Amino acid sequence: QVQLQESGPGLVKPSETLSLTCTVSGGSISSHYWNWIRQPAGKGLEWIGGIYFSASTNYNPSLKSRVTMSVDTSKNQFSLKLTSVTAADTAVYYCARRTDIVSNWYFDLWGRGTLVTVSS
Amino acid sequence: EIVLTQSPGTLSLSPGERATLSCRASQSVSSNYLAWYQQKPGQAPRLLIYGASSRATGIPDRFSGSGSGTDFTLTISRLEPEDFAVYYCQQYGSSPYTFGQGTKLEIK
Image 1 (spheres, one colour):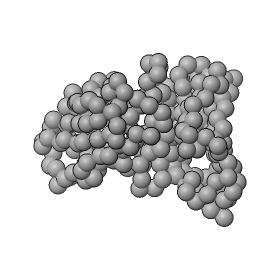
Image 2 (cartoon, rainbow over the protein chains, first blue to last red):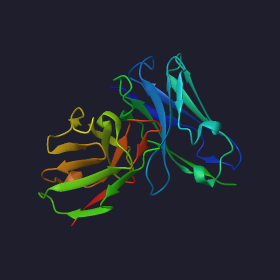
Image 3 (tube, each protein chain N blue to C red):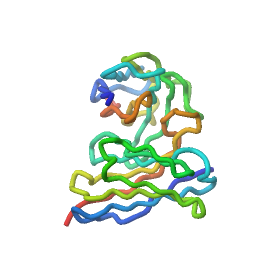
Image 4 (spheres, chains in turn yellow, purple):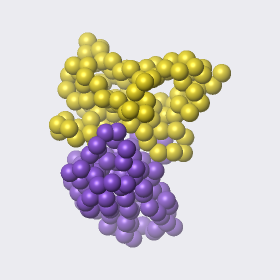
């Protein structure tokens, strides 16, 4: 079955760029929108944005100025870059698959998540 | 941006009891595009309900969703030990897609 696995540095310095990759296994990335969602410790979930295999993107306006997502279909991976990070960006970051029902932005498959801490 | 408010913050019940969780939106959710997720400690969220009332694949029928417009409810008809977790609602009727702050369902 399809599985998602996040990877990347667990510690990022303030003002630097957070970079994460999600690897899709057991299926092709060439369908669905692929998303990043984060969760600060003890808090709720925040949708960061999504990318289609064609590289079409949909970002949360609150983060849009700092977010870039990309997709590498040859590696079945998609990535997140978040610039100018602060302590407020410390969170567990999940990659997630949007349902294949057109225009329905709910998430039917999630990775296990990776903790990213912003600290000097 | 649509703000979702979940209540109660914590719900204490015993196995076998009925649980009713509420999710209220700051404005009407287009097409009743409302989903519910279950999250256990250290795990990713799991989709339970989409379209306000449709169960996701593999979800037991003791879980049901209802509501429309701004008021939505997740009902667990008869609590099993594995149902004690945090539950989130999410609206996807308009971007940005937002989540509620969660309801913790704990064993009484």
